[in-house]
Amino acid sequence: MAKVLVTGGAGYIGTHTLVELLAAGHEPIVIDNLVNSSAESLKRVAKISGQEVAFYKFDLCDSEKLNDLCGAENFDAVIHFAGLKAVGESVAKPLEYYQNNLQSTLTLLAAMEKHHIPSLIFSSSATVYGDPSELPLKETSRVGVGLTNPYGKTKYFIEEILRDWSAAHPDKQVTILRYFNPIGAHPSGLIGEDPQGPPNNLMPYVAQVAAGVRPELTINGNDYDTPDGTGVRDYIHVVDLARGHVAALSNPATGVRTYNLGTGKGVSVMEAVAAFEKACGHPIAYKIGPRRAGDIATCYASADLAAAELGWRATKTLDEACQDAWRWQSQNPQGFRQ
Ligand code: NAD
Ligand code: UD1
Image (cartoon, rainbow, N blue to C red; front, side):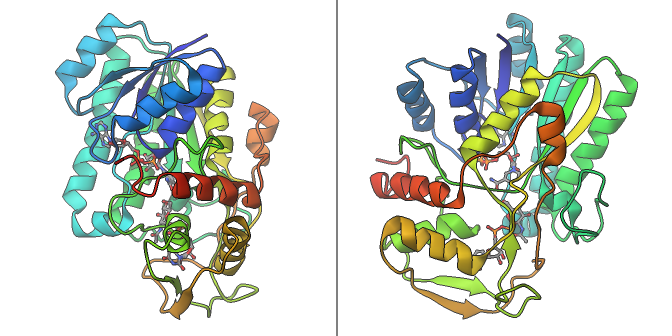
């Protein structure tokens, strides 16, 4: 059993990870400033798990509050989800993204040094591969080339910071998890993705069109060099992703380890829409629009390293992810704002 500080634990991936941590017998404690989430999500986690999660509402950049908490609790590990993640917003407000994502991480690392917390698991992204140099993407594939937005650059920069930090503190255990495209929701329908305003990502947008919240999906280009011309991505069920964190926690090692968390399978926008239509039982209205700036044609993972070293593989299907997303969407049309 580990006592785990979960930064950004009230968010989409954080809440699903809390459920899996509790199920595995760990003790998570959450810090979140609720800039992109609500405390209701943590009540839902308690409902699913039958256990309350300790929650501290403050900004991770607040070094004093963080040090007070780390001094009072004897944490075994940190899972660091906290960060801003909207790609378009990061282009409009780069300083906000660099300040929030980098400063919070630096503050956290300093606290981990001071309070001798041995282990860190960091939420990185397939976005660090930029323009893919090969497919499937391996952990050894080129990173940092073709990054088109400040959000993606914060992930790449933080990875570099973690390598420098680990070199100076070789006793620390640093695990970088590069998520591909997390989708879906907990099968209970109690927690899921709750975007504020129009969704930036495909699946929450599709879910809102299916629910009648938005009139139609715009497909961002159908002239890519892919089998049906639409973008291809590696969609991973958020519960599988959450379990990847538990697997990383259970297999500690010093130094920096980097793992892709994906399924290894590419799915086109058209295929994703068809899967969602099957799950909701009716057609999804769409039109074809222009390509989105900064988009790539195809991105999918080699997921073999996490299987070999962590004993983790994604097990849920695209159909299950769509069914679970639809359950969440239809049971919670206003998200966590009831
Ligand atoms: P989310 O926005 O739902 O969760 C992030 C949480 O961090 C939110 O609850 C937010 O309130 C909190 N937060 C942000 N800045 C904070 C700060 N300074 N102090 C305290 N709390 C703060 O996002 P998510 O989808 O759950 O993503 C979690 C992590 O995974 C993020 O770092 C994100 O960049 C990364 N990631 C997400 C995806 C994805 O598609 N969802 C893909 C790759 C990587
Ligand atoms: C986007 C981000 C990436 C981030 C990831 C997960 C960009 C350029 N990249 O990646 O940095 O890590 O989300 O948060 O924004 N699509 C449509 N219509 C829509 C929305 C999306 O056709 O309304 C298409 C896209 O063009 C793409 C696919 O659906 O082909 C998936 O898009 P999305 O869910 O935004 O994920 P990524 O593009 O992989």
